[in-house]
Image (cartoon, rainbow, N blue to C red; front, top):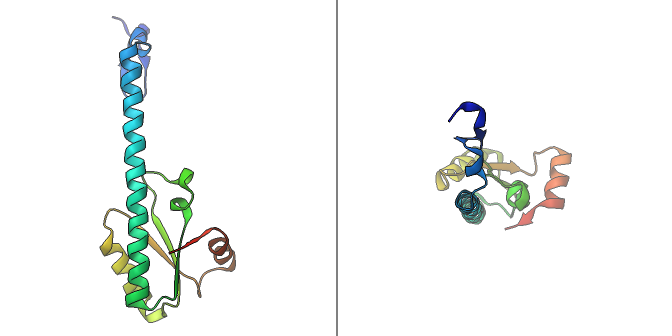
Length: 135
């Protein structure tokens, strides 16, 4: 078989007839379905992390309100590299960095970002209020 008759599928060179075979199509469909399931599981884990984080921020750091925003809320934005974005009202300046450290400890499989609502830029605050979901 010479190289001129090979097609590239992104990872491996495949003969053109293999790219259209029913077995190949079935394998690619199965792979796509597995990736979608893994993505859905990761997103569900992200929501779990967000809820745990909100509970911790309220109970241990005095947050009076916590919202999740960003790709977790907008499912079509969510990817394998997505983080968990939380916004909190009522966390004091002296507690903020400790709260961030605790958030990282509860979810080593996610980057968790925390926005202190009293200190963030106005346009970010407006976006969070408009798009965020209370926890």
